Amino acid sequence: MRPLRWLLLGSMLALTALPLPAATPDILLANVYRDDIDLTKYLVSEKLDGVRAIWDGQQLVFRSGQPINAPPWFIAALPATPLDGELWLGRGGFERLSGIVRRETPVDAEWQQVRYMLFELPNGSGSFRQRAEQLREIAAQAAVPWLQAVAQEPVANRQALRAKLNAILKAGGEGLMLHRAGALFETGRSDTLLKLKPWLDAEAVVIGHIPGQGKYAGQLGALQLRCPDGRQFKLGTGFTDAQRQNPPPIGSTVTYRYRQLTANGLPRFASFLRIREDFSADNRQSDAMKTGNQTLH
Picture (cartoon, rainbow, N blue to C red):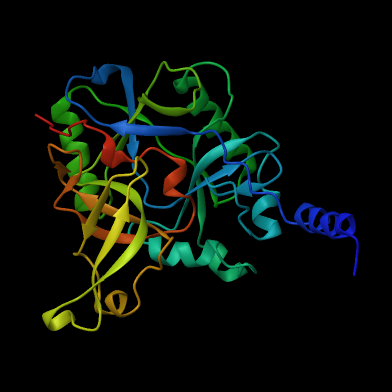
C-alpha cells in the first residue's frame, strides 16, 4: 500500500493538471432606457442580435472568457489594440451564428459570412465619441469586409428616436443602444449604456424540468429557472415542439424575454427565447432585476 503522503501528492498533482477557469473580461453592460435621460448627450446605434466578442490584442473570447475558435485569417486582420464588439451574421441570424462560432474546428465558408462589429475600445482614452472615431479608423485601416465599426449617430429628440426605433424594427432589427457621447471608458452596469427594445430580455439558469400535461404530456411543460439573485420562477411558453421534446439541460443558461416586472421583481409575460452558451447568468446581474422602464413618448 502506498504511504498516505504519496496518495496526497498524487491528488495534488492531478488537481494542478486541471485547466484553470477562464477569466471573465471586464466589460460595460447596459441598463434599460428611461424617459428621463437627456437624449442630446447620447449617440444611438442599432442593437445587434449577435455574440459578444472581446479581443485582447492576442485572443478573441466570449464574454465568459472562453476562447472563440475563429479561423487564423479572421484573427490576422485584427490589430494589437484591444477591441469589444459583436460577431454578427445580420438581422435574424443569431441561431445560425451561434452554431458557427462554437465549432471547435472553424469552417472557413461559414466564417466568411461573419462580421466583427466594433462598438468599444477597451481602456481607450478620451470620450466615447472620440473612441468611436478611433474604431472607424481601425476598421478602415484593416480594409477587410469582416471588420466594421458600428455606426453611432445623435438623435435630436424622442420623436426622432422613436422613428429610428420603428425603422429598425420594421427592417427586422432588435432595437437600439444609446451610449453617452462624453463618457470615459468604464466597465460594469451603468447608465452610460442603455438599451431600448419593444421587449426586455434577461438570463437565468435552468434548475428543473416540469412535466407537461394535456397535449404536452410526456414532454416539457415548463422550465424552473433561477435568476442571478436567487429568485426562481417557472417559464412555460415560447418553446417549439422540438424544444419540448429535448429541453435545455439542467444547469444551462437560457435567455427569456418579458414585458415588465411584477411587484415582486419577477418577469411578467415571460417567454423562452434561446439557450445562451457564451456566458453564465450567475456571473452577471440579470436585467430582470432592473426596474427601468422603456416608455417612449
